[in-house]
Image (cartoon, rainbow, N blue to C red; front, side, top):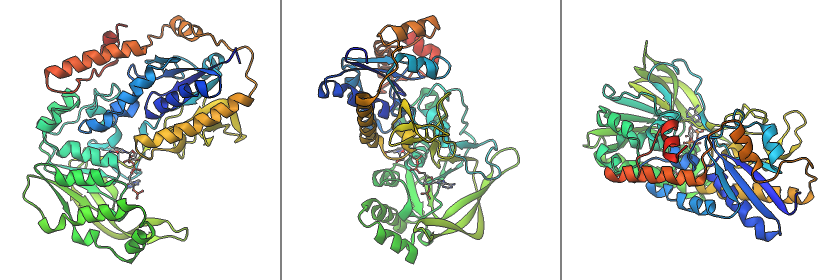
Length: 464
Ligand code: NAP
């Protein structure tokens, strides 16, 4: 190592990126080394899914940004936004400028259901709708037309499905006080949506959503959460599932929250969220665009490995809908020159050390943390211990490894390379300028911020 300085690159400025940076910079005093971290992101803005994924009506969750902002003030930190890995900078260039490289690029694409009709007009992955209403530059030019749409189906029982259902169901007046993109608000203002089907392939006891999220749907103004007694009645397998998971209170509470909706039946509100359980879409119906979805009824079984699964019963029904969102999980994107596991949508790794695709042995100096390491699970805070575990390995390796002697480690080498390549990178001070512009324009319309949603606008605000 050059002197006692360990220079590390982190790619992906979402929660796991920031938690890893915080942990890396804290190590400085712990072992006598000075650590400098450069955090890169392909967008000109930091914070990943906290900015582009967390629902706009969950501003409290977004408050975690303050902690990341503190991390960014630590000595040894630099931000390089608007830098795309693979095109603006290659793996070889990065490895030539840093001792260690950590990928925290998350899971940006979606899983497919693999059923007929999935690509009909009106059928979308939830991920792009989420990006769209959050003003993500990749999705801001999409057109979701809701003025002719009365029924929407959302497939999946996770918290992303909850977000999508809530944004579709919530009153526009409430959404107008959030940082939702203005163009999305305009579309939602004209929405004719009156029924939203929430389709779970297993039961309410197995649902992946958490208690506050389902409770929030039950408590939305102007909306009834409607469930069917025959779908939430617990059979023997469901009872066994609950008994086996008795220590995880979420399951029983989810059952209780949804069961408490039964006495009001259809309710009296204008909008209905119809929570359906034990149904799997088998075909999306329609000629040119979505007109409905064919469902197969399921039952819960426990297989030989002890896994509780949905099993089709060959009983079918069709429900009408004009739009359908699949919200059945995120998937990582491959990075040029970095191994990738297509099946799981992650970078193959052992506890955070990236593995060679052929030898399955750790590749020196490459690490992962967050969703690209373990897949898309857990809440934002789950990424903190996950990042800490990888950082611990990085520190252990740094003590033992012989680093190449020809690295370009000085602080100015990387910015100079980017400048030579005409990459208009955004620093953290530049981001603060963007932030000020957004907060100021939000203030004029009673929002916490009005996001800039195109790369040119963001770069202009950054003074680039
Ligand atoms: P998730 O929690 O993994 O939920 C995925 C859902 O899709 C599950 O209900 C799953 O059912 C279902 N599913 C998977 N394949 C399916 C198929 N082929 N057909 C029908 N259903 C299928 O994923 P997510 O909702 O994308 O959320 C990702 C992570 O972000 C989660 O950890 C979530 O808690 C977190 N998140 C948290 C918040 C929050 O805290 N407010 C907000 C958003 C996201 P099975 O259970 O049967 O597999």
